[in-house]
Image (cartoon, rainbow, N blue to C red):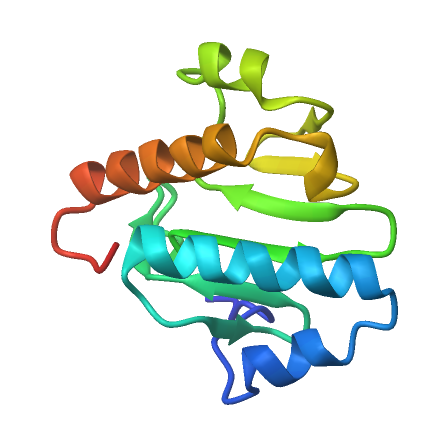
Length: 142
């Protein structure tokens, strides 16, 4: 079985965010950290060297591949702030319509800066995703 390269580490999330050179991206990242911590009730954990994750769940595919992953998280990438909404976006059209300027991938929400989106809507989206993940993985931490 292949071992995932992106695993929880002992790296301090706050120290990682403090090293972000762009002051706006650093402030936005700190705000996202606080929001995700509030929503999940979990501490920030570094996954790999660039993802800040919250909570944990275990997955197992029909192929037999299985592993652990974070319930929600984010990464301050060069181009965008990437937020990981593990439940995906199919059930959240109404929230996305109110969110503001963004793009999505399968489970990734890409935003340039928090000033371009509605923060209450972002928090509602993260909360809905965390609740969905908790209901589908009841033995895991949110």
